[in-house]
Image (cartoon, rainbow, N blue to C red; front, side, top):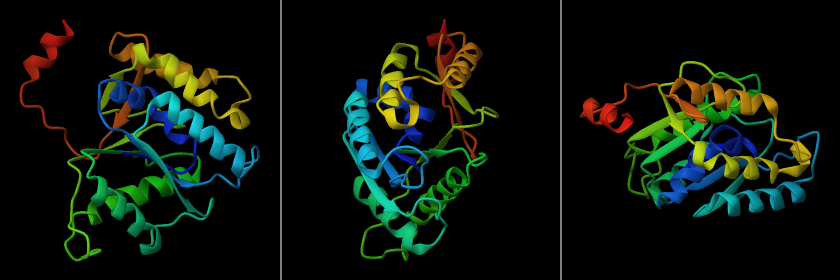
Length: 219
């Protein structure tokens, strides 16, 4: 389950990863926290239709918009509870959210909200009417930063889908895929000797039971 503050955030930071997981047969969902109504370009209705188009490109299981007020995100129970409810109902094995350092305050607040929701989802006395469930993994994708990646996912075979999902948000990109975004994804790809990669951060040490198997696959 991938979370973004705005309707195009996940596509920018993790569109290749989402497309790849869908193609591998996994159930993948995007949850947008706001409708992006404060954006300088595009109406709410335009962005809704663009999100629908991007969702089709990425073959999502579902997409939901929680309609929190754009530019007014904060870590309060009013916003935490709907997120925790979604996590408990759908029980994803992985959550992804924006990196906790970013020039856009909404991306930072989204990161904080999902971090808090991930923890609260495992608490018995938080929303006690729904059984607790805490996903095993929470990773963070980059929007305006590219530092400290815990791992890089090879998305070379799915990069055209990522491009198409980003460009589906035509009101924001006017048919031009950002050079800075492609440069960043090429940079991450270079770190793992592939064409395109998407980096993810983690606040926890990642468990690997058999590192030799990873090296063997690489060779």
